[in-house]
Image: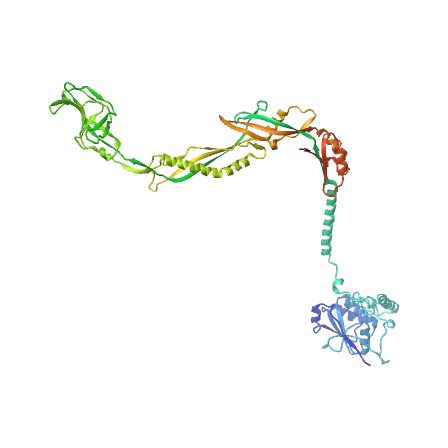
Length: 586
């Protein structure tokens, strides 16, 4: 008898199981073991690959039913079994059920093909003719071992197993039809309920979002705008107004309180002084004054403070009395000079009129007195001291004029930025009066001041304060002013009050007040406001073309444009979702 075998494919087994083929769990079957005990050993094993070693010609495994029960029990425990035997009958049964067989424990199990059995004396046990107890329940769990006469029930269980295998075309009892490829272990895994719950939450959220979007899109989102261009006529408005910062607005008197914004800046420039000046101290000293006492004299004589005294030499140096002095005729004052009697006043203080050391005159220098005759004169009683002179650099007037021009030029480079800053401060509700931006220059202050001596480096600093001013008028005041010029409109209305096109002319400043002429063009047309609600009511449920045709029949309407939003809206929604806007036909 020849025996053919082919290698078993273990691709459907985990890689770790392949690695354990040599180290598989080995179960030795005793002659006393029945199918129930063998199944218990299979279930109790911790290994996923089991090698069953039966004794030679053991009868318990030479039953197709027993092998099927054993195979099914292994599959229910996610295990693989292999038979270690050379028994040809057992090999033939294993080949029919696709159970791997190895000749010994050291060889790799292989899936045998059914051999040709020439020996008719081989004992093969037919499971349908042998009572095996409660074998029908062995695959589901352990059963109690007992002997009994329940052959009919056992036979019915065996037939039920084989019938089920035939219906499922599963002769090898591997759980898959013989003519179909086996499913991969991946497809037989237990469902992942966490993943299912996650998907349920995701798709549920998407569904809820879709419902909310549909409600929003159908109920809340639709909008409609009906823009009506009215037929209008132009009316020119020209009015002169007074802008008084300290007065309240009075439209009837054409007086408006303006909005004034100011910014103060200080500009500083360093410059080199070019002026020069003589500086020093005036000489001081004492003189004795003599007045002729005899005939031709002028006693008594009083000389007031500031009286000029002049030296009699060629320098003609001038001095002045520091205080008034009176000379009277008395015996105590008589002095005889060159045979002539004089009355004198001693120790009179005088000061040089100018600075310089040349005024430091010596003792006995004779001085004449301005406005007096030669019979009245003075003589220095001691040498004069203190006179000095020095030429230093100072800030001149021309220096100041030059630096002022430089400061003004510097201001012009930044005035555009200042004007923009003031415009920003005005805000959106204010119309700026064109031509009202001004800059007022303060006095230029230099340090040191003009004619003052500067430091050794010759540099000085000039500072000027500039006040920037911008005038504006509130849109409310302009609107009221323009409407006052229009007067009563009866069944008409102002569609464009012309504020955006307003022009200011002849801006002037007078005593902290301002005057300006205002001109603009106002557009006036038929008052359609009273028809607004009716237009909305008639538009509900209509398409844009129908709405435009209906509204254009109204007197005073020049053109109509209808828009719906979002893009899927094709008919006008409810009244509260419609807006009527008016445009001006220029």
